Amino acid sequence: MTSKPIQNGSKITITDIANASSVSPATVSLVLRDKPGVGAETRQRVLETAQSLGYIPPSTPARQAEGEMMKQIGLLMKIETRANQEQNQFYAPVVTGIESICRQKQSHLLYANLPVDDHNQPLELPRLITDKQVDGLLVIGMELTEGLLAHLQQSKLPIVLVDGYAANDPFDSVVTDNVKGGYQATEHLIDQGHQKIAIVGSMPDAYPSILERRHGYIQAMAMHGLKPIFADCTLFPEEAERVIEELVANHPDLSAIFACNDQLAVATMKKLADLGKSVPNEIAVIGFDNILLAQHVTPSLTTMRVDKMAMGRLAAQSMFNRLQYPKSSLVRTIIQPQLISRDSA
Figure 1 (cartoon, helix red, strand yellow):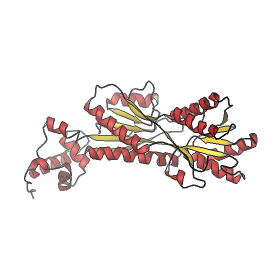
Figure 2 (cartoon, one colour):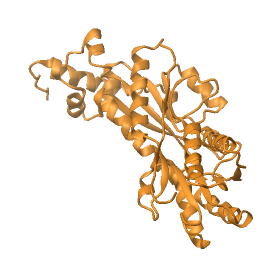
Figure 3 (tube, helix red, strand yellow):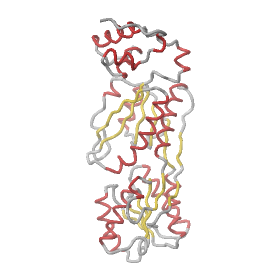
Figure 4 (cartoon, helix red, strand yellow):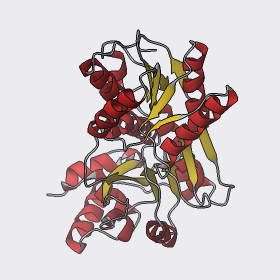
């Protein structure tokens, strides 16, 4: 049966066409923009449905005035061979911020995961990249390897790195001022009179954001003439618990710990309690990120807040700016962390 045209067909939406033709809005968008990735039969059905509803494609000026209505934005996140819950707690608000801007722009957001091994090497490329299904790509929480960087550059897609890093900064990016945050966290402990302060959860070859926090710690300790104490480990809480036991045994005069993220800080406080150490009376603890868990543990966690939703919003806005002005200069947006003083330090 032929669908009845709606009066004032210019107001027919992609959602109207999707509902009438039993496909997703993303599929309708691909068809109307004559993009690949849709079967011939489905493509024909969508076009016939659009015509029967009286859909009138917007002119080019109108489409620009509507703020990139028809764009499809890809969101790429890595999946490690060992899942780290901390990543989910940090990046979920980032994604929420991205989604809010995409809704404002009436643009579709397509998700894809990138499996990587323990050395951050991609195990396979998602179709989101290889099939060119999107107009731009947001890459979250990755340090791009040489091979992946080459693939992304070959795709010619506009790309924004979100808490992500690549050699020579070839893309727009939104990151945290981790050096400053690490410095401020350490200085907060020093201002409280602590001198034997350890850093837990960093390594000389850590992910760039963690390495930057380590550098901030080193700078603050050096500024006050204090000797750094390193408890190197990855960001997995079980490894932090192991190094904490060694740390306390080797440094009986230790009075404070800077953990490189909140999940490690919580694991640190748990291990200190197991060892009979009171927080903050015997050893103070400060974290980084201000994940939701930080305010619900006992004692509540002093930490450096990263505005994660703002990070997502700014990344999405940067993407739409890049789509509208593809030849503009590269932009690096830096989120300033904020000290949240609670009970642990």
